[in-house]
Length: 395
Image (tube, rainbow, N blue to C red; front, side, top):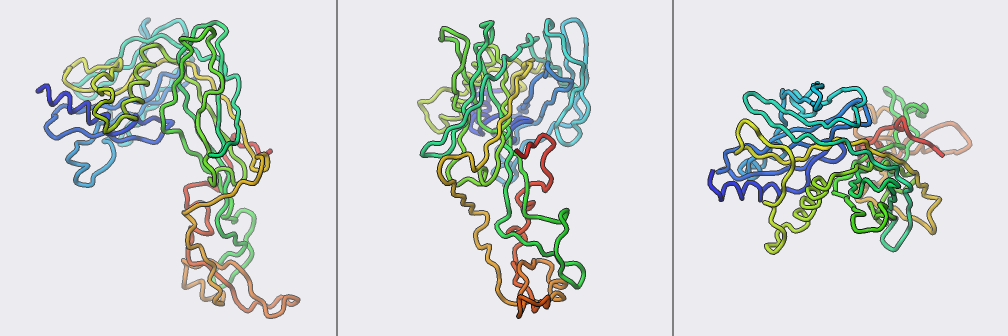
């Protein structure tokens, strides 16, 4: 392949954005049509502190596909994905067909061993270096503070053994939210009745993973400690704090090589379009194609024991009033034209909201006001679930 082809391949990799992860939303990369060699995306880590490791594998989609409106990476299905130790132990993955998501189940891994990842797809083989197990110190605290921009989340950690120095953080946010319009009524055949508790649709829970790269180092500090690292911010008016919010922070210890990799990836993504920014060709991981070195790989293999910590924030805990706005609910207007119960049976998009009675002291119902948009009354339309997640604490 020509030099220009190799450079443009890596350039288009960086133009795409950030690596996708099982804990983050997938990202898409693209390469020019003249670059014949496929670009494999490898994302995940060897989970030495648990009994399963998860990897996402896919090929970058050619630029010509994106120009034709075809988005998304191409999942790598039916690959043989294996974790191997230096003493010869092997743990193979299940899954992968169609989705590109591979789950490798294994016992708790020996902290004194080094591990690598092997990927076999047809005659093509990808192999990482052997890497040591890195054990994260505890997260010493997750704090929040309100400022003029919203609510900042800050994380702190310290390694008394002075062994870590390089850190990466991922997080998953979960929050409780409500539909814009609440209705206690439901259409049941040709009648309208009150909803049972299990039929309520106004309260939901939703989770979203982090998508940015968050790294820090104590390399130049006297102590191996990170104090109040700014992890994320909940912006003003966000409905993440309309009731109750939770964040699970995962702290991943890095080697110096891994830290450099993630730093270069972050800097390249921040300097897109800047010809004076760092060259994306500097990005190097620790996995290569052993069967054909012209095949490109984006990714780095790490063996880690992750530290985790979760906190909750209630809207009522915030100083001052927290206003909420959401463009998703624009035009959620209750129609004040009376409709009969039988009318709703033939108009399934409409949802009754309010009973209208000529005499509030009598049980007679004259008709119902309604709303014509299901998204305004059913919180699940935004992707949430009615039931709280298993970890959720209500107080």
